[in-house]
Image (tube, rainbow, N blue to C red; front, top):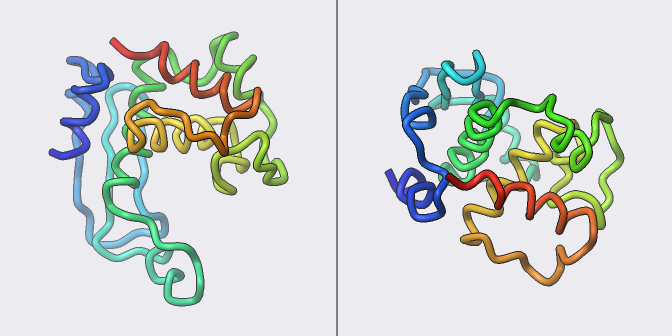
Length: 152
């Protein structure tokens, strides 16, 4: 509910976003996932291998950030997915990039363009659209502006 309120306040909430169902599952590999495009669902496992690896030094991820991230995938799907010319111009098509703090908001964002978008979206929502000075690079600024343009 908290994240949905943030999405409403920032102008990302719409009927299409609201239609995507959210489930708590028993177990999974990832922290959470989104599937089946615009009409799919988001799933968050009560126990996951990703959560277990936090015990061995992996950075902790909050539930709110996970929900923000997965809603990023929902918003992308609602706005035409990851194949639009503008999306490709801003986020590219390259997978498995080396993390570069000038280009990505997190190491996970460097894994593929869809995750780059979802990570940027998650930070955008958490920070209420205010771009931190540390991310004031041309690449990240263009991603931030792209996310901002998706507001309803």
